[in-house]
Every structure is written in structure tokens, then in C-alpha cells.
Image 1 (tube, rainbow, N blue to C red):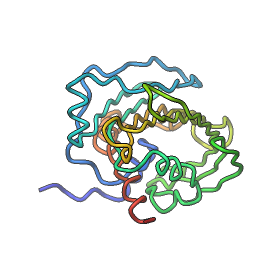
Image 2 (cartoon, rainbow, N blue to C red):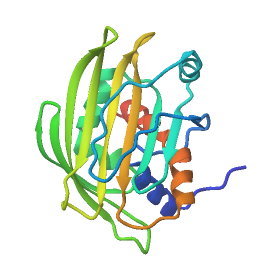
Image 3 (cartoon, rainbow, N blue to C red):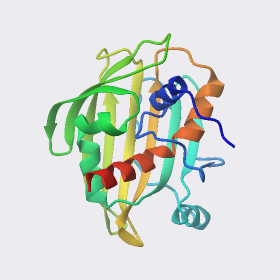
Length: 228
């Protein structure tokens, strides 16, 4: 049977994933030949819907979360799947920054500095295992409601504020859309680029991305149930 993951490693992987990380989803798999976006430090990721052929559509319909991970100068991670929560509630959870401490592992603090509709600035601190110092950051978040293929959707981007903490760079996006077969579910694509500003073994990063990233979606579902 599987071994229990040490808390220090869970913390490290939570920072790598920078999402709503909870224990790994057992049905996760790596997307072979997933979309490759060449990124350098301070490049902006552009929101885009997931590319779903019949095979991938059937896999996510069955509850599978698709993962694509790339390790390099700028680590890239991607998760695609269904969230069993209506789109409006997903957005509400993502905007509720102070409560990140309740569902985001090793989140030492979370503070909303400003908010105006789907635009916000937030500050936080993530715990790190010894000997790494905790990671501090401020991010600027922007959201935009759109229509995609005749359904409601929202694009959310975030960008690390340079010099606001001890990350080197971080940016990414959510693409969230009402699921075509059930408006009480949300089709989600999460893409993250991050440079932690410290060295970590490539194998640890890859393992963390592929095993932990699917938990992003589980975290939203879990917090939604807890809130009632």
C-alpha cells in the first residue's frame, strides 16, 4: 500500500503546484504531448480553453484529471478536468482570499489588499520545510467574464509583483467554463509558471507536479462542501 507523505514534502509540493493542493487524485495521468508554451521569466501566460478531442473529453467526463508538467528555467504545470461545483461558486471561492488558509496547505497567511469586481491584489506567506525559508508573495489577479461556444466562462490571470517577496517569478491562469452537459459542473484549465528562486531537484518537481496537481480541483470541491 502507499506510504504516508512527510509533511515537509507535502509543503514543498504545495508550493510547486501553487494551487488548491490536497492528497493526489488516484486517476490522474500525464497528457502525452500536451500543449507546449515557451516561456521565459516575466512572460505572461494567455488564458485559453483546453483542447479536447473525443478521447480527452471522455476521460474528463469519467472524472479523470489530465496533467501536463514541464521542468526548466521556468517550471510549468497544467491541470484540466471537471470541478463538481457551479461556475459562480468556483469564482466565489477563488475570490475569497482570506480563507485560503483553510484549504491551501502550508498557507501561513493570506491577506486581501484590494478588490474591485474580478480584479484584486493579495498577499500571502507559504511555509517551507527546513532549510528553505518561507515564501512571501504579492499577486495581482484579473478576471474577465466571457462567452465561449455559447456558454458562460471566466478567464482569471495572476502575476507575481516583482520585488514583493522571495519568489523569482510566478504567473498563470484559470480558464473556467460551464460544462456543456451540466451547468452545475465547471470545466477548468489551470496553468502555472513558477520560478521558486531556489534550487530543487528536477525529479522532486516532476513528481510533485504529476502527483499533487490534480488535487487542485478536489480542494475546490472540498471547500465548497464545507461551506455548505
